[in-house]
Structures are given as structure tokens and as C-alpha cells.
Image (cartoon, rainbow over the protein chains, first blue to last red):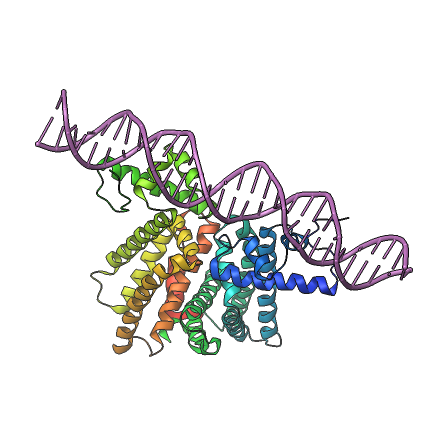
Length: 199
Length: 199
DNA sequence: CATTCTCTTGACCAGCTGGTCAAGAGAATG
DNA sequence: CATTCTCTTGACCAGCTGGTCAAGAGAATG
């Protein structure tokens, strides 16, 4: 008997195979692009039959969705861990920015896949929800900071979006230019976020 | 006799057909994605035979490259026009940011295609050059402002990248959320650029 | 060790892809 | 109005695409 359930119970052997497929697909998708990478290329690359792919994923689209879901979950956890135990809202923002820079420069392949996913409606709808949450998180800290008189009042959502834009664009440029994640100019980014070009 | 020259001389009739192909392809690529949109879909959509496509473009890839080239040229011109006649480096930056916001919110389809193009190496190499120039332009104004004591010294390239990130991310969110280009929060963006969240 | 369940194989398929090309229509030229 | 050049038609093609499925191998269970 066989089922097409995408998230069936897996033995440890099955879990390893699934992880292997995900890991390999991430590198191929990031290197050649989602569409130009065929399912045949993925299964050939790890030396298994085609049926293996469709045992673990109901479609190629399903695979990318899983990659995105897991990736976004991990970056969010990384941010949360960096923010926890920090009461000051400005420091929460700073820690969140630093955590994002760190994660993105360590996971440039996932970042690239997310960027692709935004350009196609099928995937973008999954990402909108995550973006709304992430921006609202930051906006909340900004409002706290305003309430505490730490910063002047302003449009928290636009400010949060700007912070997101700074973080991601610096990560993109850094990923394209410099392979070493440790050289990301985190201090300069934080300074831009806090005081803009005025410094 | 026929040639495959992609930029052959065109009669006015030919130029119109070519423009028609570009315009229609932009809407389809933006709506469904570059890869999912077939050449057949494009020619059927404007009611011509397939040979017409390959009379004007040597390949589907060539068409996207043309779209990107023309789009980036136009945004650059729009920025330059907004900056001209403004001697103050900070005002030059502000005007450039406002011009970019304006152009991007008026041309969300092209923005989306550029975002896609960044995710595939074939096209990304064309974009890197443009990004380097654009960042260097802004960085030069930043250095001028530092020299004139208008802002504190800092890493001009990271600051310029941050400005680019703010502008683009706010444009993306706005395009996704609100259809009306005139409601883009340009003042808030400029404020973030100039003084960060400190306000 | 028989039974059951998980996982794997790989041939197969219909449909679509980007791209070609010989034939010719229509406009411009002289 | 003959000639030349630009543009258009659409049938055709080889190759690849995502996905299916019957057959069976191997592991786990009892």
C-alpha cells in the first residue's frame, strides 16, 4: 500500500533520506535556480531513483515550500534567541538585526531561495504572512521605545520595513562580494539603523 | 534573406511590434514568472505567429535581458534628473531616494523582474555592474557630506547599501499592500535615511 | 521465520518547451 | 510596376518536464 501523504511518519532511515534530498536541492536551486533545476537532476545527483523523490514530497513545488518553511522557522528562532532576556526595546532591535545578519550570511543559499520565492505568486503568499509578523515584531519594539521616550515618534511600520531592508540588502551585497560571513559590517549596519547617515 | 541579429534596424512598424512584445512580456513575466511564461503564451497573447518573436529577439533570455537593460536605464535617468541642479550632497541623496521610490512604485512589474533576475546567475551578472555604479554614486555623495562636515564619518559603501535596501524594501511592501503609488511614505523613508530610528 | 510496513527502482508517459525554417505577404524603393 | 527588403505565418522538431506506477527489496514486527 502506498500513500501520497507528504508528511507521513518516517523511520530514521527515511528521515535521513529526506534531509539528504532537501540539502542537495537547496544547493542546486540556489546555484542554478528553481525552475532550471529538474527533479531528475536532484535524484541523479544523490544517486537514487525518481520514485524516491515522490515518496517524500508530493511535488517539486512542495519541496521548495518545505525548504522555505524550515528556513524561515530557523531564522525566526535565531532572532528570538538573540532577543530573549533583553528588556530594552532598542537593544532588542539591535540584537535582532545582528542575529539576522549573522544568520543570513551563514545561509546565503536559503536567502537566495527566499528572494526567488517572492517573485512567484505561488510561493509569495506563504512569505507575506511571515513578513507581516516579522515587521510587526519590530514595530512593537519601536512603539515601546517611543512610549519610553527613547526615540521620537514616527511611522513604526515604515521604520520596521526600513530596518528589514537595510539588513537584507547588506546581507545580499556581502554574500555576492565576500564569502566570509564573519566580515559582515554589523556595527555599521546597527549605526545606520539607530541614527541613519547622520551617524 | 534572413539574419538573427537581435538589434537590427527596424522600420517604424517593426519598432511598434517590438515594443508590443516587450510590454506584453513584462506583464506576463511579472504576473506568472519568467520561466512559467512560455514564448507561445506571449505570441498567442498578442495574436501573432511564433516566428515574430524570433525575428525581434534571439531568445527568450535575450528578451528579459532587454527588459532589464531598458528598465535600469530608465530608473537611472529618472534619478539623475531629480539630482541635477542640487549642489548639497544630502539633498542630492534625498532627491535620489524620492525619485527611486516614485519610479519603483510606478513600475512595480519591472521591479519584480529585476528581483527575479537577481536570483539567477545568467541575469545577475548583468545587474551587479549596475548595482556597483548605483552604490558608488550614493557613496560619493556621502563622502562629500562627510568632507563638508554635514555628517559624521563612516563606511560610505555600507551606508549607501543601507539606503538602497530601505528604498527597495519599502517599495516592495508598498507594491504588495497598496496599489496607489502616490501613498508611498516618502517622508518617513527620508527621515529613516537621514536620522535612523532616532528620528 | 512469516507477515507487514517502509522505502526504492526505473521504465514509461502525455504534454509542453524553446527554437527553426521554408514559404510567402506587404511595404518601400527606384 | 518590377525588385528588393522587412516582416509574418505556422507546421514541425528533438529533447526535456513533472509525475506515475507496478514490481520488488529490505527492515521491522510479532
